Length: 219
Length: 220
Image 1 (tube, rainbow over the protein chains, first blue to last red):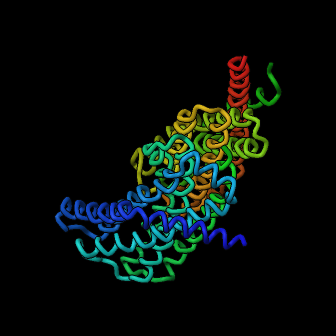
Image 2 (cartoon, each protein chain N blue to C red; image 1 turned 45 degrees about the horizontal axis):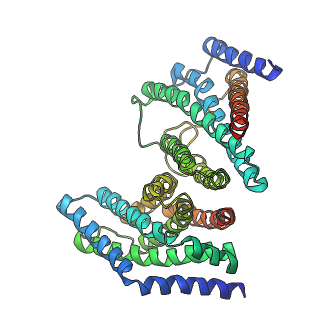
Image 3 (cartoon, rainbow over the protein chains, first blue to last red; image 1 turned 180 degrees about the horizontal axis):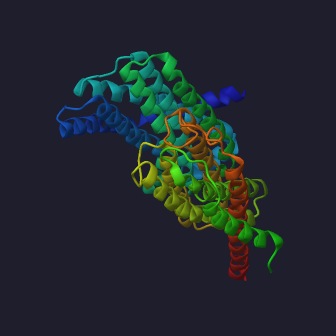
């Protein structure tokens, strides 16, 4: 029963997204434009460290702008409806899972365009993709909760950035480190520590978000 | 009213400042006499972390009881903690200038962690000020407080343990225990920690009472 409700909610998120194709298309244009601007700024010449850093900066900004809208459409009436029909944990989990899936796809797309325009320096592709996957899930977890907070505090876009960037930083640094190891092909023996931290952060973030959302939910 | 713990806080801090400069310390390369900073810098950080921990405890209390007062107290603890970040940073910078030859370096996860902690708490205050309704403010601020503290904890306590840190005791640098944090160091360090934490409690106590009174006055 409960998983059914959850899957219903996730389905709803997808339906809403695909019904309004303009937002999805907007995100795609945003990705391509951001990558293109960075390529032009650097004239395609960058060393490994710059490549890595620039990629994660682009990634962070895309994640923030994608996830920040996840609670923005929740109007007061809709909120009341959801409050009556759904469990808060299902609600936040559906948002998180939806954002995770979306971010995973979008981060792959970003990586694709980035390595197409700039050229890829990654040697250990498996490790890099793993770090990309787990960072995008952890980012979505954090940002879903931050978006909920920002929406309760009056849907302020700058507030969203102020709240989420400091909290995202530990995550971002772990991701940068892990992907740097993947770029240098240092192997699992060195990298597994960071991968474990990243997975642990995922668990902590999702658990905290589901736990704390109960209290945001009540009006 | 002067309670025993307020008096002992003053005595302990004075003792740690005076005896910290006079007593014998192990002579170590690079650190030399700057090892005495362990009496000032480290206890101040402990006091800051203590206050931030207190702030989280009251945030949890606020969510459990929803009584508004815990939220006021949580806010005051966060302010006190942020206040202690300042002397902690100053003593740290001075020490870094003499041992690492720079005031600030971005290569050290603990330094970054502190910068992030300051940013997080500034964001917390901005969040508080952007919500009008008191009940709502209390709840949302508590949620952010708890979440941010956990992330900060990961950043300050866990990451430096697995990455290379320039700090003693992290990432290949010898621990104080290995520098023989000898009985000489301990006799000043532990009293200093207790003293600074008591001082932070004192400041917090005054701020807390003032905030509660102001709140009551505003309600009337």
